[in-house]
Length: 146
Image 1 (cartoon, rainbow, N blue to C red):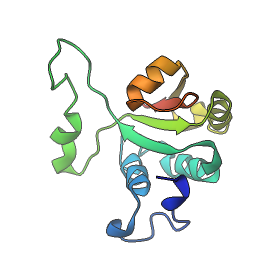
Image 2: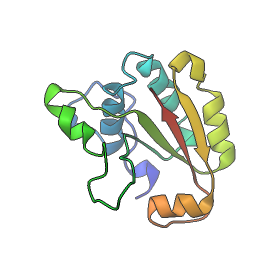
Image 3: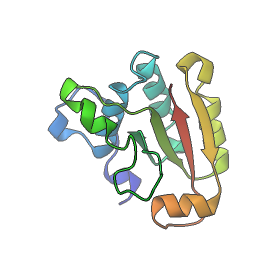
């Protein structure tokens, strides 16, 4: 689906959940994640001000890949904590068109201010595998909070 088909509303956060885009819901989950006390609204503001640099963002906490089990260690930590209205996720993954776009986005988000570590994954074999296929070129930036 084209990016413009579901834009992020300029009044993000000011309308009903049922009217929110999937991307807006992810940003709200990010607001409620482990980064909640670390200038997360400012971080979201920088993301939205630089929407031309990225296609999508999701907040998650991946399980540890070990032993071939379908439920990996810590993979359901969000499920464990959801009853307490907490989205226990520590990494924001952002899909960018290119390494240059990813580097520009990271440069606009001072990590020391936001208390996170950024990593750009640009190995196309890894990216295509993680995305389940796709075109050559995109990269994923991960922002991790401890």
